[in-house]
Amino acid sequence: MAYHVPVLLNESIEGLDINPSGTYVDLTFGGGGHSRAILQKLGKKGRLIAFDQDEDALKNALDDKRFMLIRGNFRYFRNFLRYHGVEQVNGILADLGVSSHHLDTAERGFSFRFEGPLDMRMNRNAKLTGQKVINEYSEERLANILKLYGEVKGAGRVASVIVRERSKGSIDNADQLLEILKPLIPFKIQNKVLAQIFQAIRIEVNQEMESLKEMLESSVKSLLPGGRLVIISYHSLEDRMVKNFFRYGNVEGTDNMDLMGNRNVPFEQVNRKVITPSDDECIANNRARSAKLRIGRKL
Image (cartoon, rainbow, N blue to C red):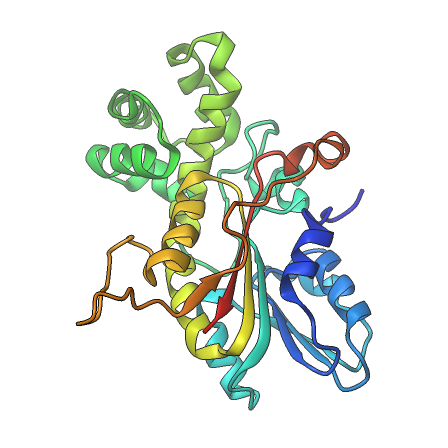
């Protein structure tokens, strides 16, 4: 089974507008699909630095003198680059999706399709797990997470039932959580709502929104003028942050005008209209169906 099938591969590589002698960053190495494609475009003087916080991904490291793989959260990528003597690069790519490896490995706890512990950590050295979120967060905090990160309708009721049931005994695995949740959800929309709930917990565990914000802000100083930032997102929360960042220069979508009334933004949007996978790609890889690609050019 493939570790992960790269999504929007040709479109994202084209979006980087690769200079064969340039230095590029793949912030989400995973199975190495995007990195391999980048290396194919680089010449002898080119360089690729990849990041992944999951130790499992290190097994996929590429044997190429132009390539370096760093284990670390991409929110800190600028610090890592500077540590290795790299101030600015020609292009940065980030595929924000959860890898097939994570979703299909029961013991990682990312999917409700398998019986497994409620782990959900991208970095298994991190202290916060899905189990802790479910068993230790207050009802109000749990409801807020489900509403904000999963856009779960009736988030308050779901949180209330979880808190009630955990008082009878710790909720430690996916099967236990499903047994509690399924009676609350109409059968026709069960998979959709369960996916939203698991997404919300996963985002909280991995601090994904905070990491994305820091990564986007760091990209401004890390890219050379004319450099490209290519981001593939998979749900509305991520895509809204990326869209706002390219349009307004911040993830909140706040207009920053100078005294002349000009919008102060560090990027020019290369694709005004979001790029989505073709029908053929969605048929070949069902997990690509929600992907959205946005490209910014550093001014």
